[in-house]
Length: 444
Picture 1: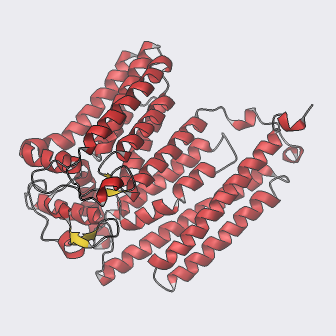
Picture 2: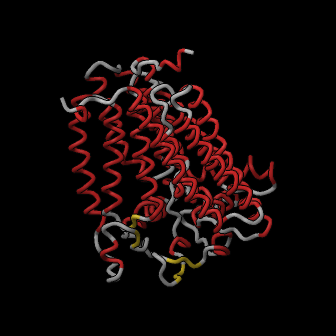
Picture 3: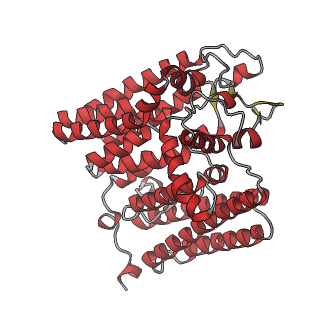
């Protein structure tokens, strides 16, 4: 019999998982160390780099040299080292925020600046969807932008507030809580809090299922996610709310899940992609008697009430301005200016030609509906939440690929949703201690 065809032993599978996450952590840390030279001020960058490299070396050493002597203790040490690395990330972001606000050089994403301007407009009883952003933080720090590293152009977002009202609600939280405590407001404080919550949730999801921290490492130490955290991209807020709502659904906390999912719908337009998949899941689960109609109704009512409470006031305030900014601008059919063609997807074929009128939304719609039908059949047959999460992720990937702008933050969004999908699949497995044979060293 050929030994190569024999299934792996528990020890071999365990070693492979530990070795893989050690390699992933080392690569992520090395990439973060290189990027830190471009972002962090001196001498802080030297301390952060030295600490991260030391932790990476210790992590690899514990993973590969001591796993067979006492696997459980080694797993505990690796988790501690992982959280220390997360701590260095938080220190780095806080330090950059402190330096930027002291120097007045706010090198952050224009969306974060625009959100702060929009909150200020609300306090002045102005509608941000009907106003111009030619005055304020955004005009001061992001009046001109570079599209795909091209020549600088006037920022088209100066005339459009593309974000949904849920972003404004979180901006208000930053204004009324963070500002009194620190003397300045910054949306990145909320993003940092969501980053910590997501990290803890992912570790919790894989805690008793595997000794490997591969998924939390690939998610939380992803260099692109850390860079987006430095920039203040609100995609992190969407990811956190999405993950929290999925966990609440799996725990059958349907009212809480509905509230969180409603917040997600009110924060990002891309969250709407999840809507048909989640509805199909609840219909299929009720049909298979895994859930009751009342549980499904509670979820729907909570989600509708929460999203409507955020969106409808701005819709009725000025429906034309709201639709033009939040929907038509992104689709490329707004009355005054459109989101420029950019990114790494299908739209890149048209970027050089200057054809701004191509109907990308048609291709996005066709691909999205196709994926929705295919995965919808699977969801309806099996009634599994994991199928809904994976289906929504695949659907979003196709919609974004054929959209006007598959930007770097959307590539990050897709990659992080893929990791969340894998983490959810791992979470659905039984605890590994019931399956894996206890090693002799573990009995000591």
